[in-house]
Amino acid sequence: MNLCHLMRLNFVRASLVLTGLALSACATHVDVKGNFPPALTHQLPLNTVVVFNPDFASHRFESTEGPEVSISVGQIQVELFTGLAASLFEQSSSTRTMPSDTEADLILIPSVEDVQISMPNESQLKVFEVWIKYNLQVFNSHSEPIADWIMTAYGKTPTRFLKSDTEALHQASMVALRDAGAHFITGFARVPEIQQWLRNHRPIVTASKGSADL
Image (cartoon, rainbow, N blue to C red):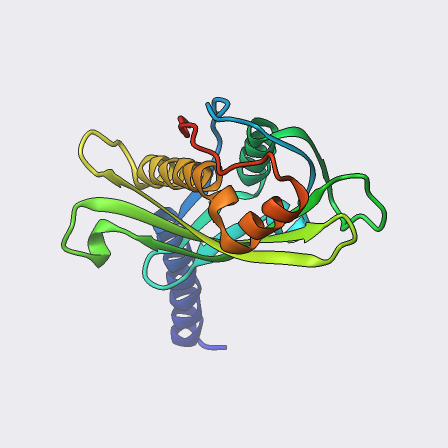
């Protein structure tokens, strides 16, 4: 191997290393963490089980279009929906798999349908935006389907006063999660299929009119 060829190989290797370092430096990784206060709402006289399957409990959104971005929302989602169920229903518990036999009135299975983000370099607005689309499947105590509720959530935060993209996306994600919580509390008993089930099985239950202060 002559000297020129060796120098070219070393140059290529160095370029690849520098490119990798540059891409890593441009990547944004967000592990969303936070707290949600109990929702102020009228409780429904129901016993529910919330099923957090592994995909939901470890969900991570990743985008390689443009700057590399990943947002981990799995654990914070579990905490959010655990708190929501405790606030909205008189009794609630959680599990990782669909129960085959349960004394609960309803079984809830949340899943993430889609996550989208928008960063200032992708739009004319100087804001970070996060959209989350949830599908909340509701079953009766015999595991028979009652409803598939598509629930969307949105959060944004301005770039002003924020120190980094990570901080901005974290705040936008938290706003979106709080928005999801508000939709859940105020909208659950108003979903037509759920409302019909409540009329048939729990005549004393009415649509929640409490506030969703999350």
